[in-house]
Image (tube, rainbow, N blue to C red; front, side):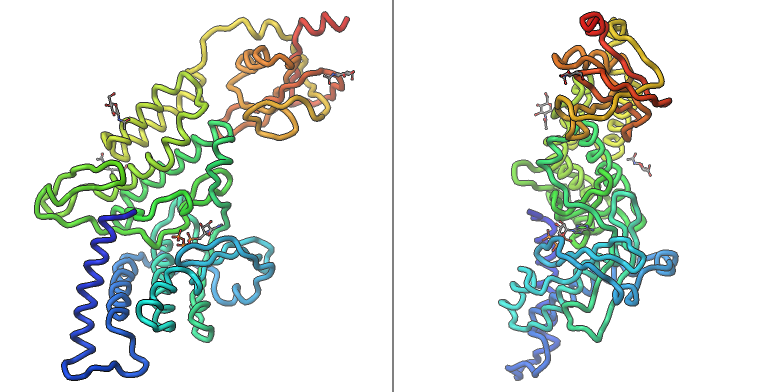
Length: 437
Ligand SMILES: Nc1ncnc2c1ncn2[C@@H]1O[C@H](COP(=O)(O)OP(=O)(O)OP(=O)(O)O)[C@@H](O)[C@H]1O
Ligand SMILES: *[C@@H]1O[C@H](CO)[C@@H](O)[C@H](O)[C@H]1NC(C)=O
Ligand SMILES: *[C@@H]1O[C@H](CO)[C@@H](O)[C@H](O)[C@H]1NC(C)=O
Ligand SMILES: *[C@@H]1O[C@H](CO)[C@@H](O)[C@H](O)[C@H]1NC(C)=O
């Protein structure tokens, strides 16, 4: 999954493990003293402590001084329920005293991370401590990294009176798990929004205050959505270390089906490896599934170009962001639509009215489940869509807009029950008015 990161981390662990062995098991003393962790575990603990120190040192005083939630808020939480869990953490939802909902993260005492450690070292307390470093690192990183694409840390509580498993609790912005299947059924505009959020996040990470950050474990389950925007929630596997190298041959970025040869920069680091790793992961886990599927035909060439360029790492994150902004611009301005069309002439406009809401024919991918609600650039595009639906006799344009500013239009098979509404207009197919008479 993360060959380079793992091998580096493993190397560090082995090295520090050996160091710990020398320090704590002097020759002639076979058994370890009671209460002292096994050498291997000590090494792992030390490696994690050092990793944590690397990020704590980089925190700005502003990040440390902010007024935030703490242990007192934790004590007054209600309505706690399970949200999710992974190898190392348990996530709960809870309600604060002021009624707002938050996500809580704790160490997952029964998770496979702790279980592996206990199996290896038979030291449950030490293993809890090891696991707690992951969460502490996450908290530290979240304090230093602020971006709309990163879940917001509201605060944390370190309570030594609790058992180790519950000692560290992070309080976070609440999101919803990212459902790829659901997203594939959503309008293209929503999928594009998710990809654009991701690209903006990767742009920030490449130039973050802590350096260029790689998300070593990059999978949809590390992300949640808040109002349709993608946010990363699992950052304990993030790293600002760029692979050290003696020559270009050391700089191979490997993925299951592809590998890239990068250059070894003068500073002895593989140049841009963190940025490139993130970008290729975005391509393989997100773009290939979400970008081209049901995209407006005129935008497809641009989207395939983005996919080709990120899939071959021809683009860096800056160029990728530029390409996304260009697609957004085209989409917002309607430049991708046919210039002239006669379709709107076939409709009669009644301004200042809408239709009584009612269940009607369904279409895909509708923004609601009751009928056919689609986004359009203007009434003209709505007329083209109406003409392509056999059931469509009318459509209602209101002031409601999507995140890109496109109009939300309801398509109807009928035009009875007109209701006055200053902000709406009803478009009725002329041919059906004639038929009614
Ligand atoms: N802020 C949040 N809001 C809603 N759900 C969340 C939030 N944070 C995490 N979750 C859910 O909890 C799950 C576990 O969280 P997280 O990924 O941080 O734990 P982990 O043990 O590091 O997982 P992994 O084994 O995938 O690395 C996530 O997959 C996600 O579905
Ligand atoms: C990009 O396009 C080139 C030329 O058509 C092709 O050879 C290559 O396989 C494409 N790469 C990806 C990742 O699609
Ligand atoms: C990318 O953009 C960032 C910030 O906008 C800038 O600092 C950086 O120099 C750019 N990198 C390249 C390679 O153009
Ligand atoms: C349209 O409205 C008329 C009158 O209310 C009703 O008789 C007819 O069944 C409706 N047609 C559809 C398709 O709903």
